[in-house]
Amino acid sequence: MPTLRPGLENLRDLPNVQAFASTDLDMPLPPEGWRTAFLEIDPRANGLPCRHQQGEVASCLECGYCFREHGGNVVFQIH
Image (cartoon, rainbow, N blue to C red; front, side, top):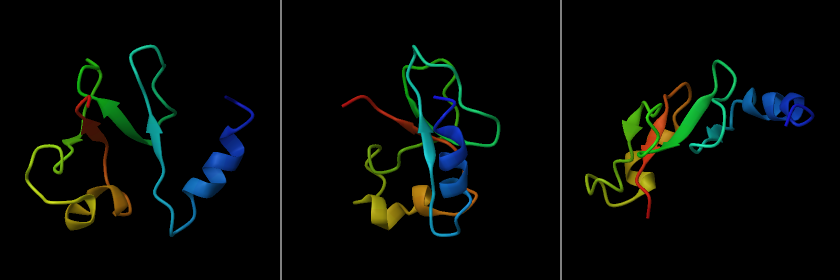
């Protein structure tokens, strides 16, 4: 929603906030520069597969990828 974008951009620029744009197959890609959370069934999906869902780590806290500043996209399994 274009009216929400300025406020979301302000939040995204805060040093203690990591914002992701969630997408699904019916949605356009977010603006350039946004970290994106994809579903694995989306052919546009690119990024690190969720390590917790892959069984590589016990929790999101243990992985920490989504909390890192300037990290990349993440790809989630449907559950």
